[in-house]
Length: 249
Image 1 (tube, rainbow, N blue to C red):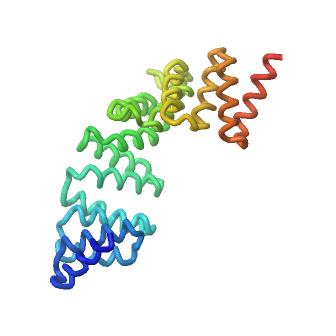
Image 2: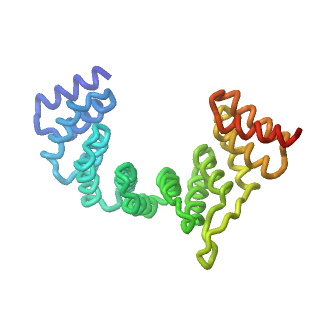
Image 3: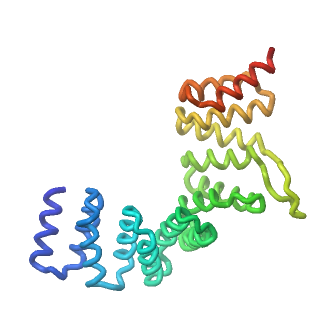
């Protein structure tokens, strides 16, 4: 790594207008968490080559890390303006807007990422997590399932889909708020999350809740206990296990 930096710096010393060398050195310095130095090289890259979408994009990522959010937004938008098929720029702009609590614009950009790249697993997943209104239930479910279809080993997509199905809070056809839990499929996705990460305490806890709802108290008790074994300070697990044990008295 040291030799890589040395040669990039030598290339820049020989040719201070070598945009690609500035860009690669910027990436390297970000990896080393030398953000102040990296910034100078990205700025130089953009100065030399104003219409390089990837430079604006990586500069925007850096600015996001150092909490310069508005300037980060500007450079994500610049990258998109240069390349309207830049899926990752839409995706990361969507995450930035989510963190700024501009949720509708966040959703729009995440949707655009999936339009451009129909295999963008993370965009489907984060879009699903933003679709929390009961009227968006089916759309959230669809996005989780798409993420899982692309990558069946996506633990958190299984987990959060399980939570969505467990609660089943949605609007019916006439707009009435209803609760229609799908415990069978919630159980399947919680179990998959556990298969992928056996030490996932929250998945054990939620699986226990679902099993208890289906009157499978023996397995529910096992998973409550397992959640507590993994996290002894898991208050909800202790509480619901206590209720289950009380019901058996």
